[in-house]
Length: 158
Image 1: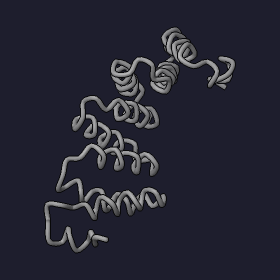
Image 2: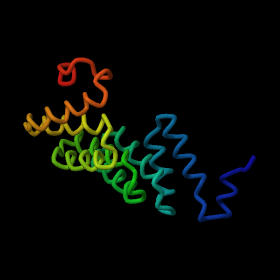
Image 3: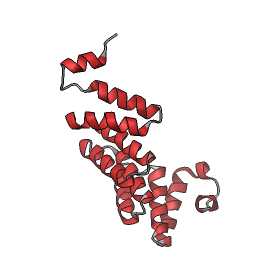
Image 4: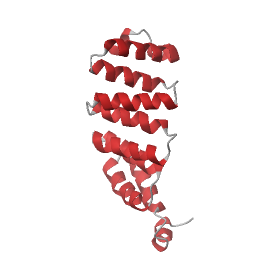
């Protein structure tokens, strides 16, 4: 078995030990510890996976703006990462930046039109801005994708 600390100590460009420690801390729900290791790794490498983990850690810690920035970097690393756009929208929504959330959810939907969560997020952000007609269309689109998952429409807003 390879000792990653020793291996990466000799190969400074590696950083795998920091990445793996960060992932382990994330899985153990130690988000602050994960951020420490993942941030150290992100200095060495611009890696989509690391930005996603950093974003999730900050989302869990309610650092919504930092989470959004991390998800944006994940998307910059991979322009096909629809999940990063959705998560950036979620972070924006939770930070009450509804216009920005709408933009991220729309971009997410452009990449994956059948994403139920993006349609739901879009509808919730539109509702927060009192755009009820638009929200109704978004919720109906979500129900068309998978109405069984949500049950009757009234439970969405309850």
